[in-house]
Image 1 (cartoon, rainbow, N blue to C red):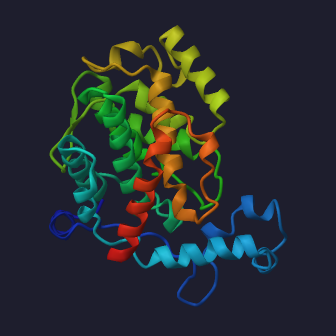
Image 2 (tube, rainbow, N blue to C red):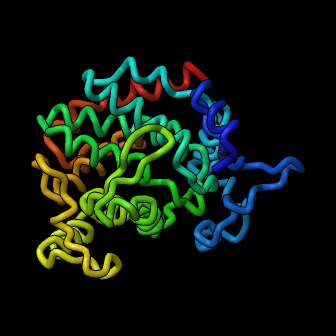
Length: 292
């Protein structure tokens, strides 16, 4: 994170002191994060990739979103599904702007506007499911961290595990039983449900659900040592670890509407209330872009 003066400016104007890494460098060359091994496992060059109309459309979308990727996002709070959702959105947006230290190589479509909308969508789902505050906060944490360790803008399988480890490391004081204070003013305690939801969010549902169920059945995860997973679940929580995973993945999936008319396949949504939120997801995208 940058110095205190820059953090203060970020809090004042709603921006973050970090910026998304652009697709094109100043000399017109393509940024290395867009030339990852993932891309070249399918094609031999960027020029060949751009001959695919679908890929070219993705790049056009990326360039459009770059124009607003670093802009303030506080105005979206007016669309929150409840007063609780609004308050949690604003506090976690402050966290994203002032405390999060994300990698910036995931492309604009995976950057702050996406995180903010997933945050709001997670809270709308929490409201629709009638979940208590403890679960709403867990979903908010997952939304804030989930794409914070993207190496490139493509599938980047493994970015979930990297982001989960960052969340674990950030909450180290919380793991020891003392919630970590943040510059944004919130105390952040580790919740293994958020950790595992982020860890497995870039994998198939069946794989993620099985891993999460097995971990909580054993009450251990190898990378967390002897930590009791159940002991990290906050008092008053109702959602099971797998329910947190499904709801978070639905919040992330709902924002696929940003990718165009065929970006979201509603058949793959997991919770009963998620399809009801598709119009809300579209409105969030429209309001984000209109402000840019």
